Image 1 (spheres, rainbow, N blue to C red):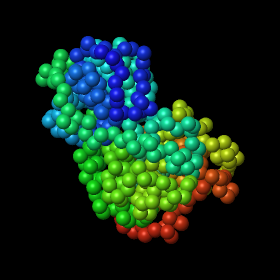
Image 2: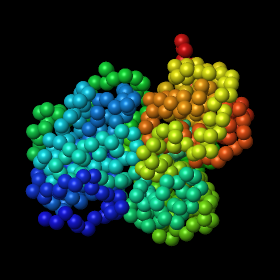
Image 3: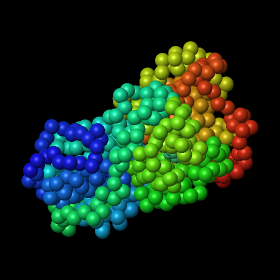
Image 4: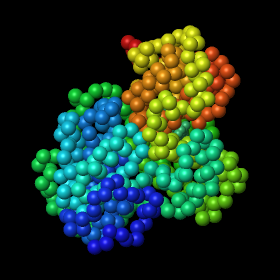
Length: 484
Ligand SMILES: Cc1cc2nc3c(=O)[nH]c(=O)nc-3n(C[C@H](O)[C@H](O)[C@H](O)COP(=O)(O)OP(=O)(O)OC[C@H]3O[C@@H](n4cnc5c(N)ncnc54)[C@H](O)[C@@H]3O)c2cc1C
């Protein structure tokens, strides 16, 4: 049987990660779900379904969660398990076998994928350009005796489409306005399993003996931070899309106000793959009555008027597409995206010129972590991070800038920002974690006026934040807890 067939998943979004063959005589197709942890608007799932149909073999979806990885904690595991519970419900009525696996102890999961791959026709996997995932996937690809095909379902622009690493949002925006349209006409299917008939696997797989399937495990011996109140999973993400489009988008211009709940709250769901930017885009253009086929950019290079939609929709899309995918472009192309040396030269030079400037205040990582600074706005933002696993967007910038001001060196500031952001944020360990953190040190920005410590890096202060916004509600909400 031929291994080429007409596919609805664009070629630019898929590639083989190893040289091993597709084995049509295998027992089933495996979709190894590591990043797009959702059943809808998912090019990887769509591709795996296509393979199963082409080879007339059952489809097995493996969603596994390691016990240990950098910053693994109760908070992130609870969030991932919420997602697995949703998927178990969803896939129960579909023509596939969903195999959720939670590693009871570090290392227990070793060999599971390899065991399945020995009997598989091929493995389809997710490409995610950040954190430990690219290295994990590359190492696994070498070990498998069967083809591992990777699929990029990260954003509206396929990662391989961009011809270079963009150093400024304005250039990336201009590029998107020229290049994005054909990709918007190739959307993933809402539910690639809808009306699909596939052969089924037996109820029990031999692997179940050693690697017991399940969506719940004891969080007890995992370190903190503990779970947040909000729930993860694609079903909750779906509700938030509806809420955002019906209640919040019309006031999105107020998103910098800490007391206004108008931002979408999508980033943790986007990070965990519980939500796709394709879905958000599709629902938004339906609401705005926008036709991609008729899209003509009115004012090239500008964010206003880029789409001919309402101003709020345009500024939201600029965040969701230009800013979000700018970070993915960087991580996909630059292996040192998380290193200090990847900062633009002007920024490094300027920061180094001011490395010896006296810091009026220095805080240790522990003091920062415990929100023990003199600055009540900063402390409130840090408490929001600890409690909710997120920080209000505007305050997140201030949060990073103050860490630069209060650290012995810019390198130490970078280390502290990465540690705190990735330890507590549900959306941490993502390309946009590095965009945001490095932005505080000059990435994607221009040189400003010279000042102490910051050099030419853009400065932000708590005093001007206090003058700009009404903060009382926010400061009360994230005030110290009894005993703090
Ligand atoms: C120091 C610092 C650290 C950050 N760490 C992270 C992080 O760990 N993970 C993360 O996803 N974002 C991070 N950001 C970017 C931004 O703050 C969040 O994406 C945004 O606040 C998420 O809230 P929302 O989903 O309600 O955003 P909305 O305003 O509703 O925007 C919708 C989506 O657009 C994207 N987006 C919005 N603002 C930005 C931005 N400035 N840069 C890139 N994409 C954006 C996000 O995917 C977001 O979910 C960081 C920013 C800073 C300054």
